[in-house]
Image (cartoon, rainbow, N blue to C red; front, side):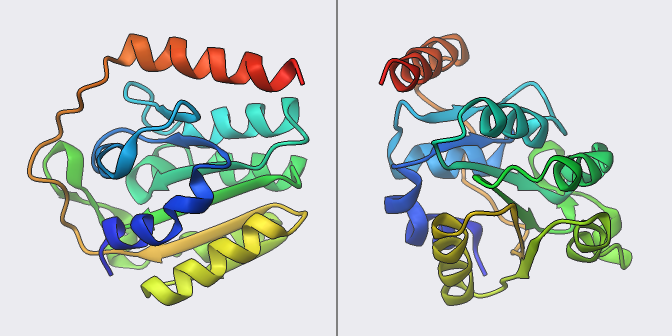
Amino acid sequence: MLREEALKTVYPRLKDQVVVTIMGAVAVELYNLGHQPNFFYLEHGMGLASSMGLGLAVSLPGEKVTVLDGDGSVLMNLGSLSTLARYRPPNLTHWIFDNESLLSVGGFPTATGTGTDLAGIAEKAGAEHVVVANTVEAADDAFAEASERQGLSVIVSKVEAVGPSSFAMDIGLLENRFEFARYLRGLSSH
């Protein structure tokens, strides 16, 4: 499955949620589908998207929060799966796209290519709802269910190790930060 195809399928739901992405391909692919003020591209914090998502989910209990992550990023902060399971925010979906590589920084292989099972680790850590979704249809169904349910959801999707032809985005990282903060302030004023 191509990550870009999965994102395109779920994009209408993402537009209604608070979304944090890791650096690189997933950020660019989401941006290319159509930037929204509720999308935050965490470009300089590899491994920390799930931590940021946890903080947002806890502080915004009335909002659905989705973290779009990658296997390399999750492996860099593997303890985050235990932390998410410990706090179990009912409004958080952590979607891990596993391409078995650090695609955005040269394509070096990750441990998932030699057997590390991120869905199994999340489940054993105590995450409530863990789903493996390796087709666009399965990913769409899993994300739709996660978006409707009350409970921490972890989705792991094996994807091809391909990304966009360019990693450039027309939005500056500082402007994205300010825009996202304005969006969040608007939520808290309701």
